[in-house]
Image 1 (tube, helix red, strand yellow):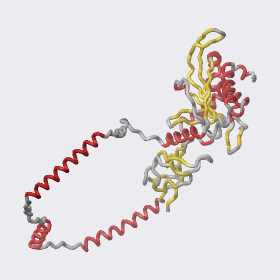
Image 2 (cartoon, one colour; image 1 turned 180 degrees about the vertical axis):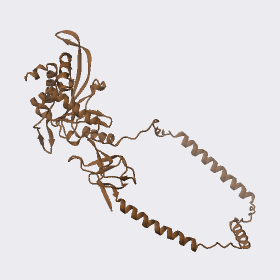
Image 3 (cartoon, rainbow, N blue to C red; image 1 turned 120 degrees about the horizontal axis):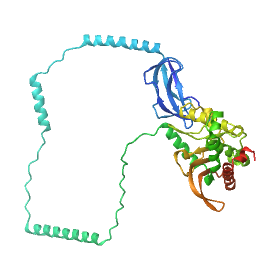
Image 4 (cartoon, rainbow, N blue to C red; image 1 turned 60 degrees about the vertical axis):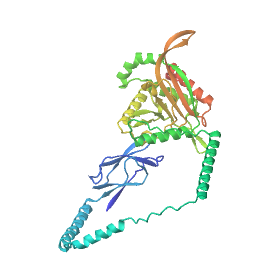
Amino acid sequence: MAIDIKMPSVGESIESGIVGKWIKKEGQKVQPGEALCEIETEKITTEVYAEQEGILHILVEEGKEVKVGQVIAQLEEVVQKVAEEIQTQLPAEREEKKADLISEPTLEEPKETLELERKEEVIEKTPFKEPLKQPARMTREESLRHLTLEEEEIKEEIKEKKEITAKPQTQKEVQPQAWELRGVRKPMSPLRMKIAQRLLEAHVGTAHLTTFNEVDMSTIIELRKNYGKRFEEKYGVKLGFMSFVVRAVVEALKKIPEVGARIEGQELVYPLTLDLGIAVSTERGLIVPVLRGAENLSFDEIERGILDLAQKARNGKISLEDIEGGVFTITNGGIFGSLLSTPIINPPQSGILGMHAIKERPVAVGGKVEIRPMMYLALTYDHRVIDGKEAISFLVLIKEFLEQPASILLGL
């Protein structure tokens, strides 16, 4: 008896996945609780485990997409496997003995018969040649008539060639040569293909628009310089830039809630809690775990929450609960040196904020040119939900909060 191994359900919004890697091989004996394979989705990677002991028979290869509930492998019971092998061996042995007893000697044909057959074969393959026909005699009149006809044919052929040459020749369409790119070819990982598909759907399926602004980070840099060490000693985590950005986004979402809304059917849904997605780069690709109830978190709770989510994501321990339900996303391309970019919305959300590298630039301050640490901010939003005025106002609020963080701390 064989037990079916099916693609598990990993969330309400996930209908399919990709078989990433078979941890166990075809025909291998597995024990209960052992991981059989990895299933990759656009959100998480999960493992499928054996429920009982058995011999693994793989039905779906690595890299193939499967639907939830689809059978991807079978476990054959070990007892049944041994019994089948014994039953198949006994008839095979009996057949071998029977074949030895029944075998008969082969009879050789007489030599004369073989030679006669070869001669007949040679005669049949010899081609038949017809006798050569003698050319018929022609009279003098017939010869002259024949020459006249040949001369007329030659003149007609020359005339046709001249007419063709005189006509304008149309240039033939030249087909460009298809060049094959030379280089090392590496297949895309199943997760990378799924992410690519989701990003393309997000780009095509939303009325996306991006607006920009720049922030003077002098005050926050000074705060981290003066209080960063004491903060780490007290709370056990470093005081980073992200906690200030999270608090700024929370305050901006409170004032302009449309940025956190989403489309469901013909309705707009406004969230009751501000669960923010924080993009994390991993070896498998970009993952967006969610920081729950960000409106109720202090600076140290934000820093600790972000650190825990990033470690889980990079160690492959992220769960479906960690990535579902975000209302807005923050991504930081500045850690890789990006100066400016246009982030892509993470559906079904309606907005995403892109942070960038902090660079010293000359700016006008009080009528004078000063060198200040500046950072570009980019807000990509779904224009079906958010108007331009709301998007620009939202980004201006974030700029003001980051340049004057005391207003957040004082609740102003």
